[in-house]
Image (tube, rainbow, N blue to C red):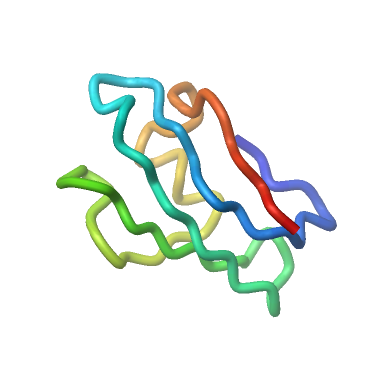
Length: 77
């Protein structure tokens, strides 16, 4: 999953396509940094390897295996 330049919307949810597909990952985007350094706060419904209340950059998602597992992203303005 890539965050392109100008990605300044809030992500409201990410649907993970794995054994926990019904769990939702809530992402808070801090807009005061460019997309390469943007901090994301994940709140996971239920226990998950991502954990609760941790912060990651967009690049960190790859370390958690999200690249191949994200099936949809909901964005609101």
